[in-house]
Length: 116
Image: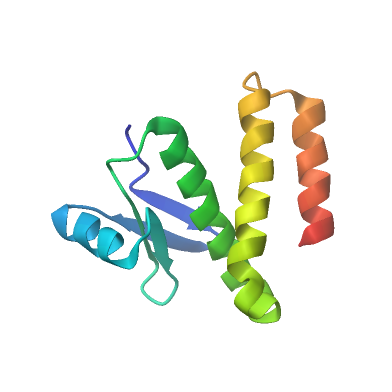
């Protein structure tokens, strides 16, 4: 799947790292995606299926938001669990409403506003 070369989040542009060294690094760490907030970069395994890659990008996006809003510090060691739950929930809404159902997406926006 064509993956984004960059993601702009909260005024910061994260660049995607890719290539064989990224695949090795991800495999070594046991991950299919990672983000580095100091270097403003993210990695997504290019061997993932389309739905899995989409979910992983959303997952890393939540980590970026948590870092920028300081929620990562507040959540501490529970950040990964919270990000995973939010990812699966929001990913399901997007997949279940491929036509961009405005009611469903507005509810997601409201939910995120309450959480964040």
